[in-house]
Image 1 (cartoon, rainbow, N blue to C red):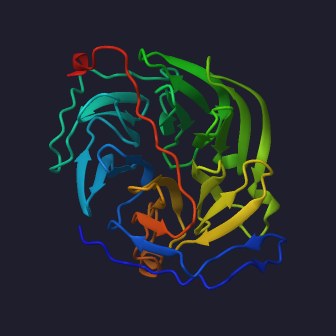
Image 2 (cartoon, rainbow, N blue to C red):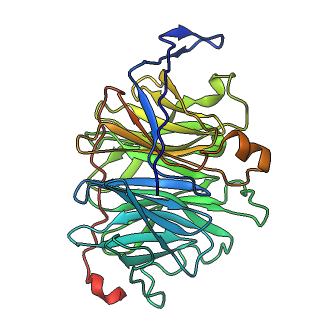
Length: 346
């Protein structure tokens, strides 16, 4: 897939805005496309071992790999929605895939399209929430223990989401799931600080980033508080929501704004907005640091539900972008560390 380039001039430097915060831009920042458009890009995961970026096309149930400028894809069957793709630790080519309320183990070296091995008769998780048939696993990420944290939501037939229908779970290394809390609406971005003492979480409908005290030894959360409220910045319309999120090596947060056309940088100590990186498309879905030095911010985007006029105005919507020149680096993302016999799922 050919990759076209968009260079962002971003000429504004520390200009005060009418709503009281400061938009930071730097002419040395470069934003460019690394893939062509798909319907709804999500859940980017940089794998340092393979030096490859993985992400999903959620509503088209596709898994994508970008390596050395080449994109390959794998379609997931038996699914209406794919949430995440995460490498399994200590394996050459195995991945944990979440789809609907199930999880599967996929064996895929990524060298060719639709060449993966998945045994759909042997799910890793068979229906996480059996009493909620309209629920699906949305965003997720592994912690430093290799446990996989994932959130759910209730998706209606018209694509709307039912209020407080979701929960946040931790998938333990033995394959069992523990519910951490419930009554979320759109469980989305999550990450930890570098000392493993704080956990950051986004429920998109609340338009907030919440911070918890995190006990790494037992995985418990306590003392939650709102760290950042998008409603404090009225220049963003009420339908703009925070989506995916990644922490950098300074423990500050990078948050994708869905319908907001931007990635924002939030101070994890104060909740203040540090800077705003404007994107060339409106529906920004998620972010992940990658590259050899973890100094590239990869950004997934969406064109899901776009009409013809929107597609004409934003032909690159749905592409994955790279941002260079931010002056920060990220942290290595973690693999899911399964302690059992992985071959039983094939």
